[in-house]
Image (cartoon, rainbow, N blue to C red):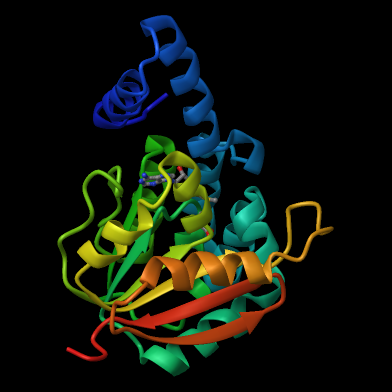
Length: 250
Ligand SMILES: C[S@@+](CC[C@H](N)C(=O)[O-])C[C@H]1O[C@@H](n2cnc3c(N)ncnc32)[C@H](O)[C@@H]1O
């Protein structure tokens, strides 16, 4: 499946610590993995996508954008963001300034939004995910675009990146981290050595029926607790970005 061994061990140990038998623990880990990888959110055909990207690079920037759009549309998180992509990064970097280093935490397919970010090819784009085929495709894309292939298979909850950066994206994953391990965002957010931690969360449920704004605000402000961090909210259609300035008060 291409999942780090440390993740499997960690999930298993957590279940055994709850007093489950080996058999019960295996079943529970399978369920957790299903939620973590979330195949129901969608996946591109990775081999085909790599071939499409190689061809698009030869054809020029507009074709690269078309292929990236097709890849982004294969996963629910990035599919939802497609109509607002240009505005999304414009407003974010208006607020943070254009970074020379980015951490994209639990990146999924988001690095394929790079052509809409307006950033130069010498930006260090460190993307992390536990799903190996995603990371392989992201690095293939980065190399074709002339970026350093800085994407990495890593369980960021167990091993938070140590790199210092002006900006980190943690998009549409904080609520899912809580399902893996209640309260785990607190130490994770503290560990990150970044100026702006941008946590985004969906404002409606996947079927669009429930408004989740209050719930997401409770999660973010509850996680921040007493930390002296300033928060600015940027609201978009279906997504709320909490721009957390971690340098505030230090
Ligand atoms: C809901 S998607 C969000 C994707 C992306 N951040 C976005 O908003 O477009 C969650 C992604 O996080 C990855 N993921 C889940 N847990 C992770 C962990 N502990 N470390 C690294 N990646 C993780 C999954 O493999 C999946 O690609």
